Structures are given as structure tokens and as C-alpha cells.
Amino acid sequence: MNAISRQVSTAIFAPARQGVNWLSHDPIQVQQWRGIRVKVRNGNLEQALAVMQRAMQSSGVERLIKQEQTHHVKNSEKRVLARKNLERKIRSQDLARKLQTILIKKVRGL
Image 1 (cartoon, rainbow, N blue to C red):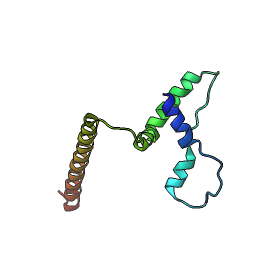
Image 2 (cartoon, rainbow, N blue to C red):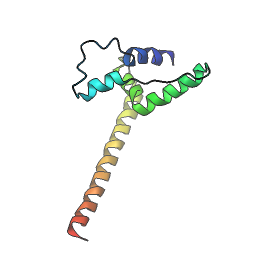
Image 3 (cartoon, rainbow, N blue to C red):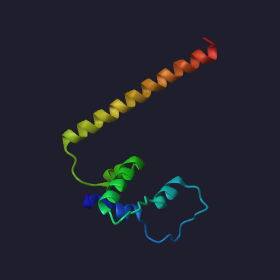
Image 4 (cartoon, rainbow, N blue to C red):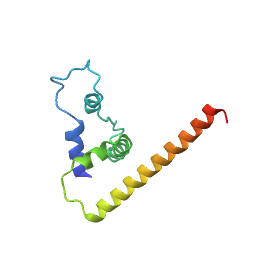
């Protein structure tokens, strides 16, 4: 948890906003400066950390941090990730095929 929080603090809480064009609509730049804010209520830091971790998981920040890590990935982990990616790709193609058939039927009036 400490390693993740250190990386998050460097990735999310960026330095001063110098040289950033706030009028540009570059989504990468906007996302880089958005950050995640969590209120600590009644001095309960543990609860705030749990809320922050859920927010990071749901926003995808945690995934981005893990992708940037440059450590050795075991072959078993590579196989699991490859299988998950393949399943995701097949599921996406299947849903696209189903949607296409539905749209064709609608257009033809069947």
C-alpha cells in the first residue's frame, strides 16, 4: 500500500501548474491535472485511504501505475494477462457482431 501511495503522490499530485495551456482541450493533459481528492473526516485516515483506493481503482489510475512499473513479470502472470486480454477481445467482437445483426434487422424492418 505504501509503494502505491508513493507512486500515486508523484503521479497525481503534480507540481505547480507552470507552462500548461488551460485553454487547450487535450484530454491527456486535462486528466493529468485532474487528480483524486478525498476528504478526511473526523481524523479517520484509514477510512480516507480506503475511499481513495476505491476511487483509484474505479478511475483506472491504479492500472496506469501498474503499467508504468518496470519490474519483472513472471511467465504465469503474462499468460493470465494474455488470456484475459483475449477473452475481453472475443467478448467485444461477439457483442459487436450481435449489435450488427440487431441493427441490420432494424434497418430491414424484420
